[in-house]
Image (cartoon, rainbow, N blue to C red; front, top):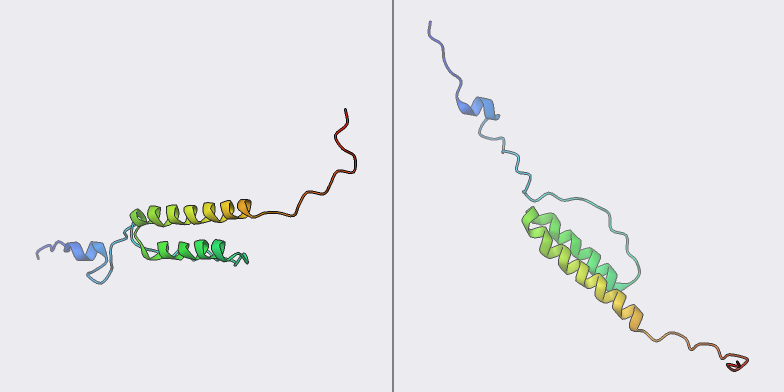
Length: 93
């Protein structure tokens, strides 16, 4: 009788099972609801690009989305609003 030592594949789950890699691409499947603002929606849609990247590639996507959202907010602030209503009484001191 001789003892056999199981090979490493038996402990690793066999050759067909892939090792878990926490940095591997994995879709987050976070739903994105349209806002109605084309610039904001385009920036939020860009987040889907991170689903196909390893975690070390997410930063570039997030920075790009942040820049797009910041630009969209800046554009909203730059739009002229309605004129201020006239003051019925002048500035009297």
